[in-house]
Length: 225
Image (cartoon, rainbow, N blue to C red; front, side):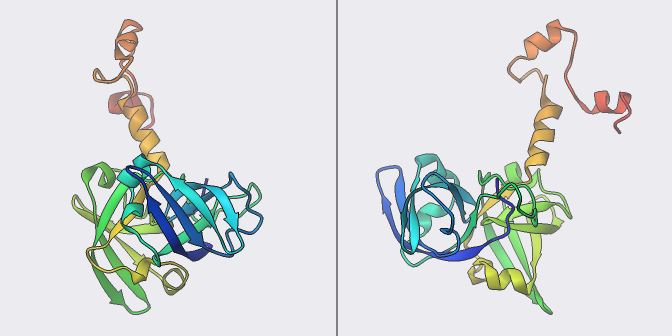
């Protein structure tokens, strides 16, 4: 588990691509401290397992599914990436619950400065936007951010100076692709609300047991709404 509070930005030393997968080597200093082979590090929001530690960095494998779902495949030698070690049990929860399993990608459409902050507009598909709520949380390239606006085509966040200084976000430009991870709680709620739907596996058993599953009517009738 991660929190979306970036510890440092690293630089890709190499990314060796196979037919479907890849091996990435990253120069970093902070995230390798007290880290051992087998530990998890989020790279631009993607949870990767450390396979090798070097004096100034680490190496990790990237599977085919990760390349399909994320923007890691378009990065190259010299690219900067946001890095965060998995949260320790006694650590502060400064951001929000981030799993490192991104839901997909979005595209930066606009960047506008407003005094000391910068507004960033990101377009995304409905499969991602449906879980985004105003004043809720979203992880962009592994950065925990608060959603300030959302509609059916895009959402907006406002980035403070500290975030811009400690991450790669403001080094992006319109047209760049970013990794997105929705708040995991929203995804679980959505799954539970749909449980027992006629299209869901196991719905036949629910009907036999006289249960239609959890839906809006059920929540309303039982005092949850």
